[in-house]
Amino acid sequence: MTETDKTAASQKIAASKTICPYESGMVGGRPRIESRTNLAGRVVAVLTSKRDKRGLKLIHPYTRCIRKHEVHEFLLTDEIEALPGSTVNRVAAIAFIEFTEGGVIMENDMVSIAGKEIGRIAGFDESHFPNHMNILLKGPERKTGLEHGIEGGDSVEFIQG
Image 1: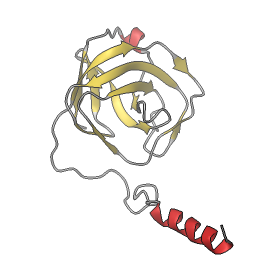
Image 2: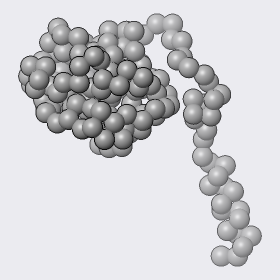
Image 3: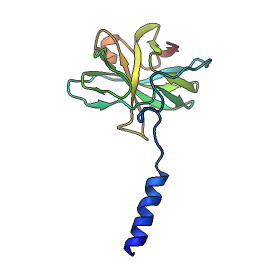
């Protein structure tokens, strides 16, 4: 391959990369969504680990689209300043949750499991994607799913924030 071909190939690759409007600053802050449906889910696995130096890198977008039957991991932090685009270290693993309804979830939505408020969505981490996404909640107490008394099969509700 000639230098001209290499340059053309590099330019084609660079041109094909899209710009994240949140990360680039094109869109600032939390988006406004006029109306959306409520999501629902069920616990498929209760988790028990805690980490003090997890290094979760929350992506910049404030929303994620979720398909019916997707399974994602839910984590909880007591780092109240956690927001999309930030890095979070102190986490407790809550559960893997299967979504029984698809839709859109958003930063600040409240997550309730078996009728108990667990925390509000702080953001999303894609370190295990495409296997699953980490959905980070924030709340006053960094407790695991086991410490919350969560059990497999418990219902999960998402209350729009």
